[in-house]
Length: 309
Image 1 (cartoon, rainbow, N blue to C red):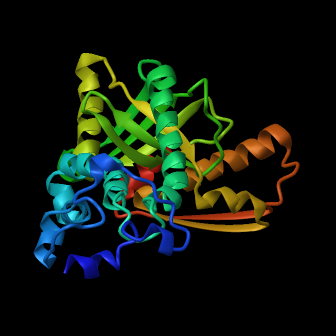
Image 2 (cartoon, rainbow, N blue to C red):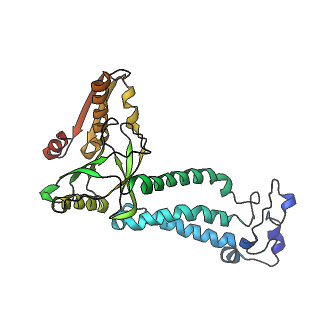
Image 3 (tube, rainbow, N blue to C red):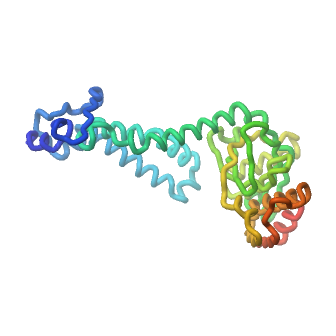
């Protein structure tokens, strides 16, 4: 009966519930609390704010899991990307609605206590990305040089693209081994993909070595190849740089670095940093005494291509 259900609901017994805040969101109250009629299990699921919002949360979670599978991402990356970004906004809002009736807990949506700080920090990070994109990156960064090593049989698939990009003048502090997100507005203004920076902090440009393994990288390779006839390299935007494990390499006395294929990129940055440290500063303040680099490639072409970098 509804009397028995009311005895279990915090909103129906605020004085008897320890720490109950009693916040009321009347526009989200469905049904009104305390209950005035009997509710079955199906009624609670389909005729209440907690029930309906819970179903929507479950549906959203299933969609995230489905589109996040490797096969689905490869089939339609845009669907994966936009759904996950949409879910980042919708998920905490639905959790707030889910707890707005105060049936259990402290009478206020618990997501406000558990997720407020992470959501704020993430929002600040995204705001920083938008700031860099619109104020400092979009239209002001240029690809100064692009070198494409074709894939097997001269195809774009499996190719390597080496980019030298003009260094951002603002909001850019770089250490060796870090990575940055890259956007290709001509292909998709909202897709950002991470790539390790292979240049050093002392270099005048920001360099990337990118393998063609998907639709986005294929579009980048295609536009760089077309520049041979159009004489116009594609416009890009950068976001970063972000920390990576290779940053601590310079603090060691002996370094052994092993890279496979395009995985050599963080070590190219490290090589540039080591070279600059000894050529410009005589190695002062650098604990590193020995460095051994090993690069494994599938073909001699990659090795010959990498030697020019």
